Length: 105
Image 1 (cartoon, one colour):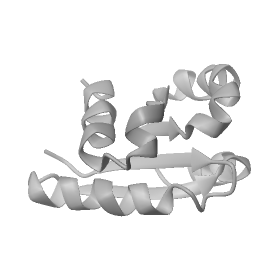
Image 2 (image 1 turned 45 degrees about the horizontal axis):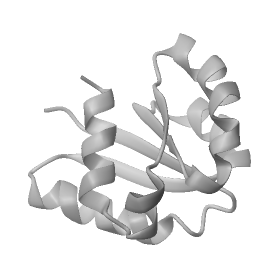
Image 3 (image 1 turned 45 degrees about the vertical axis):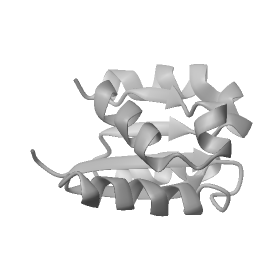
Image 4 (image 1 turned 30 degrees about the vertical axis):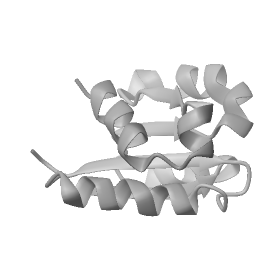
């Protein structure tokens, strides 16, 4: 499997940093080559212009941005999803990673 790039977006890019760590651990344990990082919602456009992103996942606190992000990113072939609130709250990196990979088919 080729390297997957997963971008998480939240209010400030801070609250998702622990989740990123958990997702990277899960990817490593499953032998998945992944670049997973977090940004603030305002940095999404800038990051998409800099490198290819496979999936964008929004933190529950910015779920109101989903429709706008989807309109902007789906034409580029980038799926967008809101991270499940329970998985986010319990920092279930393996579950969030599985959701992101499922979005890629």
